[in-house]
Image 1 (tube, rainbow, N blue to C red):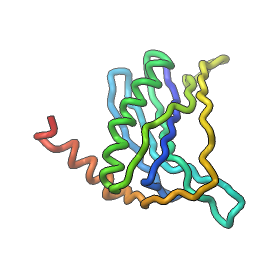
Image 2 (cartoon, rainbow, N blue to C red):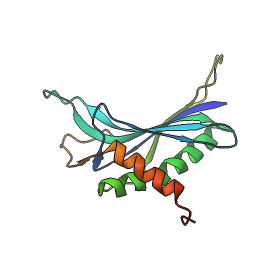
Image 3 (cartoon, rainbow, N blue to C red):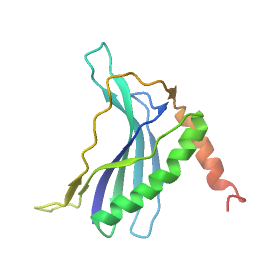
Length: 147
């Protein structure tokens, strides 16, 4: 079965509207794909303002609960790398919603965790350099002394 799970976290690292970081993670059930970006909030200004970090996780899992837990663990291992690369904090993630995304289903499992919207204050933050962050992640992955 395929699932989509979304997480949010208050975050000083900010992805510009056109930027995102996509990470592919091999797992026994098949590849999971996590996409990290910043929510863009329409507050009636001339342009949107940055909101929370949004993590979109997709892939196969044994169950909806397993997808929430497993994809959350993957995301939780990547957010510290983003924070380190930008030298800015990311708070703990909160599960927002999850649903079954397998093809040809008439009914789908769905769970939503109600999270308050971001406040109206503009957050201070630092722009994520996606290229440099990818290079850091690659260097960590290739490091023979990482364990």
